[in-house]
Image (cartoon, one colour):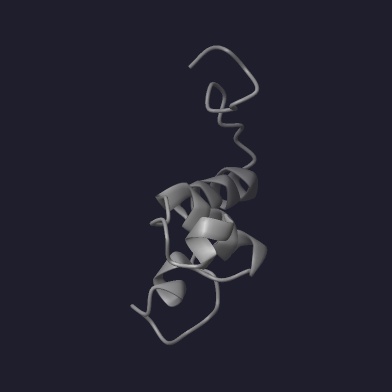
Length: 68
């Protein structure tokens, strides 16, 4: 990470996502695409909220299970 912070190595996308999550913002904000620093909803979050609101479990999409 030290090399990345000093410009000696490029950022990997998953690192940028992690930093955005830690700072509670979006990747779009970090790279200057938007001015609003609020985190964007992801498809997973929106889908989970939809499933929760309807009371329907999204069986098979849980990463802790081995089946799809």
